[in-house]
Length: 278
Image (tube, rainbow, N blue to C red):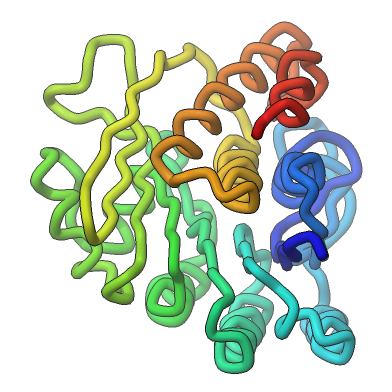
């Protein structure tokens, strides 16, 4: 039976952010995916209009209940969480993850703490960010913040490589949890590059990649989906990060070519690499 992923994220009709970015690579890796939307929008806010809404808490709770009635937490190999559109949905998700880990101790939880970024700053209400910090991070086995999110969640800006060694403790992560800090620019990062830094209990690894001169929606969501897709194929985490970064470059360049404001998944090389991965 293929590994099952429960993916609790935003969803859009047009474009690729949230589940609309993350689900495809996981399916391509041969995983079974149960996407549960936190919001349903027509598109991202970068367009002149946007339709849809955050899921009402009662409907979201009903979807979680349905997932539990089908025994998905007991079967799941992974849970992924991303953007939350309301405080109630964030709290309901924390309760769901807690129950799922209680009935399935082997389940691995990847928390993408979608809070903000350097240019816009924090773009979710502070109470939602606090639920992510206080309730979800302590449950996580893997967390994937960008530098802004890392600084907000830890209360310490990321300025030196040594700061990363202390971050798991400042984030109150479980002793065995792995921090994957994305988009890092450290004093010794090569010019024109950014890095993903993996802080695991046994080692720290740094993964530089060329920085592309474009900012797009959906990059963190796609990255998380690519990481889980690689783990579903038993790829070691450092190799999974390298593969995800190569795929991110393809998705960003394709979006740039098409003039899109979020990642694009239509590049033939992107799709072929997903299917050809061991």
